[in-house]
Length: 496
Ligand code: NAD
Picture 1 (cartoon, rainbow, N blue to C red):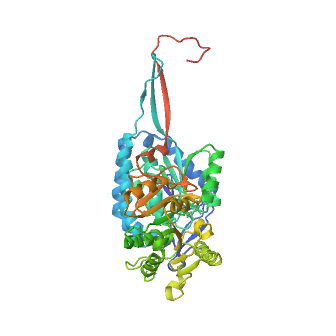
Picture 2 (cartoon, rainbow, N blue to C red):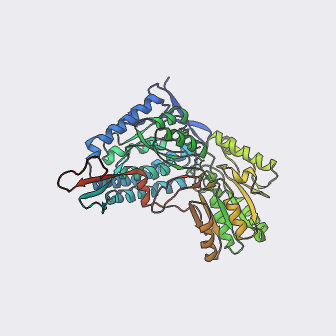
């Protein structure tokens, strides 16, 4: 039966493919709570085709024979095309994951900078000449790509998080198979159309859509995949790393978080209120860096919470495409259930709900997958709502007494992705930034990222770094070449 929904196809070896078994997955519009598109539901046979195409492209002269400068120029051309299509791609993401157009369009306009930055870096990857202790040996290193990279992405910011992998992977000369989230694959499938237009050889970039258990597993296990670059939840990340370990593959993991946003009594209070809101209600709390634990110094706790609630209460829930909307829906029904479950847990644990605490029921908001911005006070650091990643608009406010107490509470969690500090004292900021177990620390700001600055997690939040010039190292390996300048060969029975 032909579907009335718009269908999007995978790109494999430069051509469009549906799944070999002809199955499809419906992609839902979270604002309307109804399906709007279909993506191929692939299986292991499709994975094999995509990886084989990527390996063929990796070995082929059309890609391998390019100079690093030429690879860089392809990435720049791609950046220009993304800029041209930014609005179209942002609209697809919003339809698929319900995040605000203002947020996704901002991301799409910024994404080209990653391709320009890593495109510029492509021909600055250098080996070295090593002064060995052997006078008659000339020894140098080559920095080489790994081969086929599997890039596995989540649904919350599909193209941004893909870009963090794709730009350095391609700059280094790898080829890629992308596995986007089954919940939000459409923008990725539309985006990869740009590669042919930019001039990339077929097979350098491929996609494979489907469920994690059907294709994710097969992709990670495929013997021709050399590296897995994964963004997603920590439980999935642990399974991916274990599977990749069986095949001795390179792995980088960008995982979840439970980040502390810490407000001291000497902070610029109105800025800190905005920073706390940005940390948890932007993107409906569906960001890995969500400042979902708000640590507030006890001396200003009540005043701060009152201001926070006053600021958050009028936030407008609504159509994510509309500029006046502040908070969109969460992306999936599973996520909706999960967030509501955690709100119940918070109540059962004895926390006090100061704002929100459920689904809005009126009109179109009742059909969409909305959760009210929710603020809990009276939260103890040991409670589940203070320790577990909710990935929704739910804030846990935890009081602290002094610097020591703030650091102890901030670090007493399994994750370590980010932290925020709000204080007018720079000596305190510098002292505490060094003691927080987090890959990113923001002082008097929140949710700032750049292509120039490394991003990644401590502890259960991940392995490896994305962005910044060292990120290209994650996609390279080193070869050491030894050339003898000696006349003849010395004793063959001993090591040289
Ligand atoms: P998820 O772990 O459920 O899925 C992520 C991806 O992994 C999806 O494409 C999924 O299909 C795939 N997958 C699932 N099982 C797999 C398997 N066995 N083998 C291989 N792939 C498999 O995560 P999600 O729900 O899509 O995203 C939300 C999570 O992502 C949150 O925990 C969030 O914190 C995290 N996240 C982290 C960052 C970061 O940069 N640190 C950024 C965004 C999101």
